[in-house]
Image 1 (cartoon, rainbow, N blue to C red):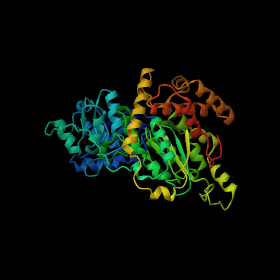
Image 2 (image 1 turned 30 degrees about the vertical axis):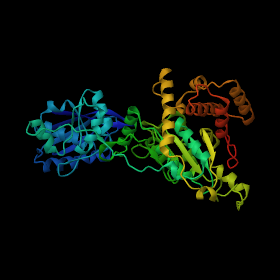
Image 3 (image 1 turned 90 degrees about the horizontal axis):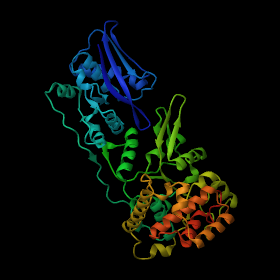
Image 4 (image 1 turned 90 degrees about the vertical axis):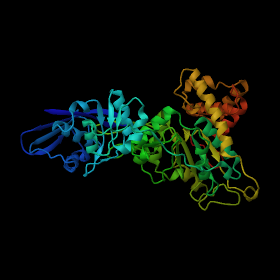
Length: 510
């Protein structure tokens, strides 16, 4: 007799169906797992045997063969344990085989028969729903899986005994409830920052249109403080965005307690991060920082200190909103619709261009330091703003700046205008100007006559690339949305061009 149990193997954020086939037959005593398993799957043999023994089920003195079909699909991870154990229990008659046919099963077994949490419960639940089946998952992963929909039958047992008793009718497992992560209070507020009005304006524009932003200034000028306050003015995630973000974090095992939050991700990796850490990769092709920041912010402090190869690897995600990790035997794609916020000093010593200060190495220090950022990457940054040192007068001046709540209201109104505009054009999947196509931005950001003349003169004089030209239009459209203006005017284009042009600290590289 062959018992069958359904489970999934993860490719990116998708759950690919896997059929676990268990056969108990006469032969040499032992348990063999086939079907291209990795080390973690092969070791499940020992975990399954110990867990069954701890649950009071003795294995027969026969040969047990477990096949994970399709055999040419790599099987990675420890979440196959529970499916193998339930398949073996069904083959031995401990649980009814027909009861398992309506479920997809994931879970890792402890040696005492309890079931440990695994990554990927939410994508597994969505995959099970697509197959018209329910889901059996660990109790700790149940609140996460419950977000896949109220119509999905979800069982979240704590042990093998609990699931066996449920199918025998001696114990009823209740459906887990979706869990929400409590909002962390006390987000850093823009009111804490004194001075830097132009930088705060640029931050507001970047938040309103989801634009990439580069801040250049000496140490201590407030670049990192400004970036840390960006989450306080960003709108919450929409339900569709929340689902995408949660699926990525679920695959990465970064949903503590299975609790979801509508706050946009804010990732700030150290400048020693490798290309695999930023883009994704490793032995199991895990998502990197760019994918973990999907629909949120990727903040790169000390921008030129990152490895040039790692920075240039961001060029494709910034353009296509995806990270593609290619291997010899498979190819994984993770979403990566990120807003890049970067901060850097003008040179290695940090004081180039500061009044009353001079760089020990002269102009070469600044040129060499900024040359670590390639022109094509710089071309993908919409807004570049100079953040000079804060003066003593700004620090001593009484009173506080405008709070984040007031800025967030303006950003929310601008985002709402953009959503309504794109929905009216038949593209409800677009939520910000930065994500619009070149054809669409030319249509929705067509300037008036004075603005068109200014844009033409600026493009010819400053040698904008085609990408740079369209990004100026995107920023100008956002500025018009902040003013609730139906048409992009000369004043909007003038401000957008000023953000595009590198300041005195940053030579034009794009």
